[in-house]
Image 1: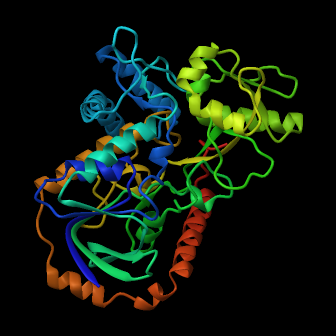
Image 2: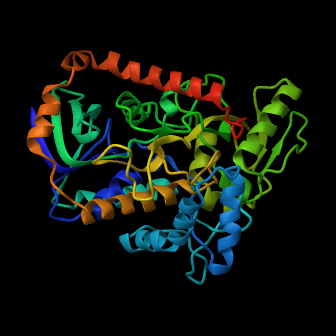
Length: 441
């Protein structure tokens, strides 16, 4: 089957949805997702989204981001993100996102590791859910946008380094469709699904990155992978690791060794805290360390971290009377499909935004709560760039490209998807051998 669109967006996290919201209303848009729309890491984000605290905060925010990224960040991308942080959070508020407020009605701000001051807007401990749900509600109201759940991208349709859409499969019917588009936007998230232990949804396996590797689209820093310091330790270790937000430590929780003694600065950048935890686990001969939330007033814990309290309770821990066991797990991907500040990749008509791309804003290690901001800003910039420079693709060339695809690959989609996972693992290993990622513990 063949379908034709002006723009195809792969992914229903904040990057994909925000891109759709900022495209012109007269464009026919398709948004696809592998599972249901809520199965994105954006939905899982607990901590919050950064917002510049006035011009006097610019230098310190910039320095915090560069320090966390080991100065491998693209300074232009960092400046762009910080400059537009107030604009992005104001837009979210105008859409109906409810951030925490102080008694006087002003925005409340929290702090996380690596930040020199409180500059993070939040909604309890489920900021990602609040933002993603709001964006989904607004996107679903657009008459020019159609969302395709349970739809897997198998490949891109391309010729002479120009993208004309994607090859997609309906997960239920197994029907293969050529979805043609004048522009295609990869917003398909991270690579946590290829790891044994990750905070990511298992379905996020870096398909966009693998497909770009296959077609010679530039991919940068593929071995730059962040390990989150604190996920709830369970003996089974099956399925997705439950993240204990960095905001918990930002509000005063402390990390303790087997003798219940503090062993690190909990507000150091994530890679530094992760390294300290691994070192302490090895020294103690334990599979976890302790996190003590009793240092935070109980009323604040109930108000700010209700989901964490409930999840710990389900696992048999009362955060108000005891410590909880935590262990690091794969969390975020700083590498990805090379993209500029407008989301353009090295293939014509192909854009990449969100965690699947690498525009250099995070460097070698992401600063906490920069991910939602980065995804929202650069997806908006991609949409505006597409709108400003829109030109129809050549239909004959597009169909020629589709006719020359190796269709046998799509007869065994599971085998194809497994090959994509292996391609990413191989690329990570090769990159690590060439240039080890010192930002990872």
